[in-house]
Length: 221
Ligand SMILES: *Cc1c(COP(=O)(O)O)cnc(C)c1O
Image (cartoon, rainbow, N blue to C red):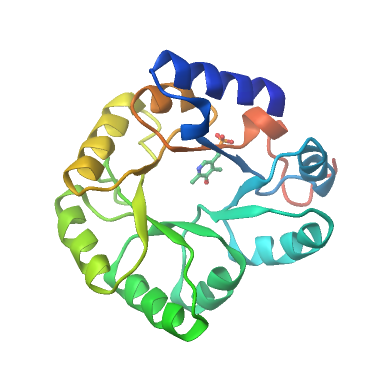
């Protein structure tokens, strides 16, 4: 485990699928990790990171960005309208656009700020009541709606149900992206990123396999 090991596994999985390592972006998910661990991965030259809370990211990334050039920051957690402005100012990509209201807010802010992060639409492929994401039956309509707002939709994202074989969900997501002409697929985490790459993932979101287990926020390193 660790960055080097996971990068090698990403490259091997890509090659096994007849793809190249460059086609897969490894997002190192640094949420809740102690700064020292994040810094160690930055020191190794990695620049692409994922956070799931806007406020937590606002507390740690401006400082890292002053010290490390070229940081590419992805929001992978839920986005509330009242945090949208902060998120759009900080993040280079947002993976969790999932409803018309947040799409409209992002469009309005994009006009105002003159820029917009790359966007992924989160799909609740398992139709789980507690999970965020647009329902599979609503995806085509929602993508069309985002396009009418001129939003830069790059692809789709999913978090499969814990109890189910993730490959079925990855294949479903890949199919929805393809029929809508979208090339980005944000899928695969520590336990299943290799299967996701085999099914076309362009962005894998890997946390614990790179950094080690997440500690409680108040825990010490
Ligand atoms: C935390 C998180 C991850 C990373 O999870 P690991 O199992 O630690 O790799 C990936 N995606 C999302 C949306 C997450 O919240």
